[in-house]
Amino acid sequence: MKKIISLTALVFLIQLALHAETGKYAVSKIDTVLLKRANAVVRLEEVRFEIVSTKETIETNHYAITVLNEKGDKWADFGEFYDKHREINSIDGTLYDAWGKELKSMRKKDAEDLSATSDGTLISDNRYKHHNFYYKVYPYTVEYTVEIKNKSTLFFPSWYPQSSELLSVENSSFNVVAPTDYRVRYKMFNYNGEPIATQEKNKKVLTWTAKNLKSLVREPYAPTWRELTIGVILGPSQFQMDDYVGNMVSWQDFGKFVYSLKQGKDILTEPVKKEVHRITDGLSDKKEKIALLYQYMQKNTRYISIQLGIGGWQPFDAKDVATKGYGDCKALSNYMYSLLKEAGINSYYTLVKAGRNERSITEDFPSQQFNHVILSVPLQTDTMWLECTDQTLPAGYMSGFTCNRKALLIDENGGKLINTPVYNIADNIELKNIKATLEDDGTLLIRSSSKYSGLQQDNIHEMIHALSKDKVKEYLETKFDFATYDINEFEYQSQKSSMPAINEMLDITVSNYATITGKRLFIVPNVMSRSNAKIVADSTRKYDFDFDVSYRKTDTVEIEIPNGFTSEAMPPPVTITSKFGIYRSNVKLVENKLFYFRNIEFTGGHFPATAYPEFVKFYDAIFKADRNKVVLVKNS
Image 1 (cartoon, helix red, strand yellow):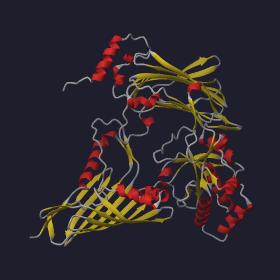
Image 2 (cartoon, rainbow, N blue to C red):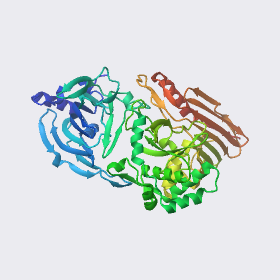
Image 3 (tube, rainbow, N blue to C red):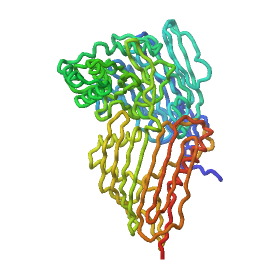
Image 4 (cartoon, rainbow, N blue to C red):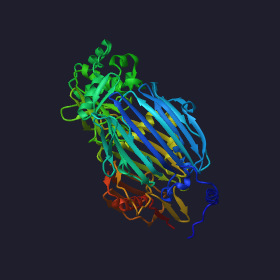
């Protein structure tokens, strides 16, 4: 097949031929290999990070990016945060056209100065410098230089020259400058060789470079970005934040710093002390004491983010939380720690990287990789975990927000990595029992009773606690794979325990569910659990892939059909077995009732790229099996 050049591309090529290539950022100078599957190209990136002392760093970033099309516009957006510890000394920017001709420039005073306080944050000193030339004649190039002074050395930058997919890189460099006696700690990903070491006056310099990186396309279920491309992360050895000094060479040392921030913050008011003893005195069951104090904390506090100076890391005093009734994750976890301490129960302040897709940390490189605080309470045979920012979760349950990952437990000896709970296939269960009646016109009347437990109940838990009943109904009216249906009635009941469950009752009327043609009736017996996952086949798969949640779903369906029908075509029993799980289904007609059973078990794990075709095949087979139809014929 002949490739046809678009009119726009033809005009651009003619224009290139008519203009002298005077600019260093002329698009014609880009190797055509870097233009393939790319929305933007990093023409130049020069990052210099200088460790001036244990309490000050200066970071300079000079970069130029050519935006090739509308999808690449995000790369033209300049933004930098600043606060009490982070100052933006200067900003310079220039806009160039496709031939590298300068069109416009800007300075720091031209950038917007915006608040960076998010919803749910009570107080913050975070602000944001933003600029965009808002140019829309493609391709074009933006160039920025920004210098940032940090008056804290707790956070060090990382270097990912190819920070996203569909981005190519011509030249990128990362220079770390430090006093000769400062231990520069770094970890490299996918970088060949070691950094080049040089001297600059009385300081040492480490330099990493990257050239001609082709655009990457992140494949479905791919591992973390750092496993796919070049990267370098840094971590301080000695560091300082305000008057607090620490060392991050080991997790234990980092934990000592965190512990110092919370020392003396566990003093409660006298009324709260009395309440603790009223609740727990006389009880012998330690778990019961913990659960009751956790409920007390939930009822009397609420989560508010506080990001002000050292307050972004240091918890508020427990007595302040008791008086004001609010706090951030640090303050509320420390408050719960204080309540338990008053009751004679030991617990541990624990740092974690929270988020449903944020499970991975670099375990062999101690550094600040956390964004949340939870509480762990050791028991005789296990550990009870407490999420102190949530007013609805039961004691002992972590949810998908913080489960199944490494966390840093803090005590008087420092920090140590531990595992948060892992919820497996025996915990994450969905049981659905459906009794339905098919009317003569094809309408299906459904009465569904379901139980969701473990991670399978997380989304429903959030929905029923975050939305009003009217909003829940609106959601249910768009959730199911029916052409036309009405939600007549619904109800949810929560079972609070360390392995929570939710019971769901639904009454639904589905119009035209079955197809009636002459004497024949066509019906899909899988009423409410049809898989919609269609995995795109890829014979050139490059990367391993992750499927990290294990769960079981079981459906039992009973459909009463109109009298006088017999079976003409019945799907055979289906069993699909693979390393990713097991699927079983079968259907039978007994008198005037269809009985359908479906069970699916997904097994999570990390799989090689060579297993991807089997993964696609497994999902395709499930997709088809879920849509098998029963054909019934009316007796004469």
